[in-house]
Length: 288
Image (cartoon, rainbow, N blue to C red):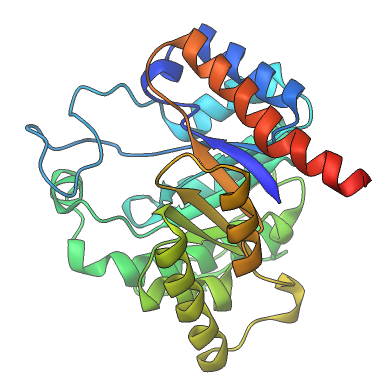
């Protein structure tokens, strides 16, 4: 089981010194990956389903991960998730390719349709188009990253006679992970992406989502070059080792733990405790 950390770009870790300390320690302790969240704006006052108070500092994902890339060497860097339906896909393709080059091919590009209508309204993007935009824009990323003569003629994006460089360090094989707990998100993950990311889950909702993914696998074709679908989950509560085993038994490949928001020293203590309880324990069992 891979163990990652969610929240490297907001709250406590929106401070660059704290971000660097946490990122360096996470890599030293053997964590698999560091993940950002994203909201361009938050509703004020906070109202469901908004995930955070409106004054929560939240750094732009690629900006934060570029900084983290400079202070780490091997740990993977994930956007969990980038709200692709809110972006110009050509700009996003350049942004993610640039980040992947800067971090030497360590990027996991997590994308999702989004769910805050207030955010779409502020950006002037029709909320009801978010699913179609997400599917189309994933295809745009792939086209710009892989084609020698990129062109596209879709509902929302049209281009030809252009080039976008640099390409990602791994080109079209830069991992794209789709977030979301809807049938459309499951189909998107199976048909278009390397992996699926479920956020704020428990064992029951994870099991239900995996059943939804199985149904999607029967309904849509998966390109062979994408390989096996990697399953990533952020648990709603901090897991113990028994929870880790239960998630693994369901078929989860990676748990991405929520960072506490109480101070840098508390975050570092959390990382050390999770390393001992989840990473070191698993290593000991493997050696046996």
